[in-house]
Image 1: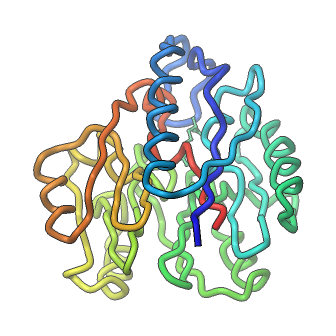
Image 2 (image 1 turned 45 degrees about the horizontal axis):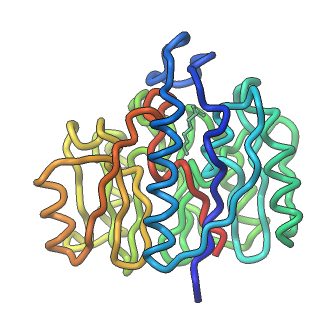
Image 3 (image 1 turned 120 degrees about the vertical axis):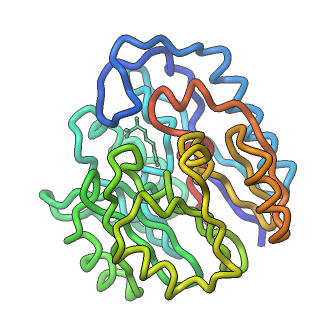
Length: 267
Ligand code: ARG
């Protein structure tokens, strides 16, 4: 089956206008041309690797709408639409919902007071959903999702402010592999990770690599698309049979995102 991936172009991605994560500094200018180029490179690379990219129109005054990972959690034909913690991103919810509905997804709307930021904080490895909480997503949403979708959900607290979404520090790869940054998690979450992913399947990254958003990578088959990283990590991936493709995601990192945040796997 061809993977389908949802993206939204950075047409209105010009500057950082608010601060909702430690990477954002209000007033920072973003090079729109460079952002568009990176986004095109990502889209073309995904397509070349055999997946299909579907896009939505961007919206003026909603620069973060490019980060489609936060649109929803997709499970089979259901889309659980995100409920953003910060007011700045809440207007995106309806655009994502409309688009996903038009694609034929059955929408699930979360209770009003329950924050949940979609595939930014909830990632499948096999049939198990790994879900992050505290900075953006409420832990109460994890049990809610578990019974709603009939799935096993494992909650992991995000303890490092820089890695505020699970997909900034935890990247399940094909065939049960995992690339992750251990220091973004407490000891308990690290134990869970070690229990669920055998050592030969784990690819830990260093602080330097984590700060290059290396865990925020797009996985298509045995390929990984990511921000420019270290030779060490590329070798580590290569040893496990993963080929890496690097692009410069500097402009998006000013908003606290990189390759994976710009995508949402639909199937
Ligand atoms: N500025 C965006 C925010 O803070 C970045 C989102 C990155 N998305 C992600 N899935 N990690 O919400």
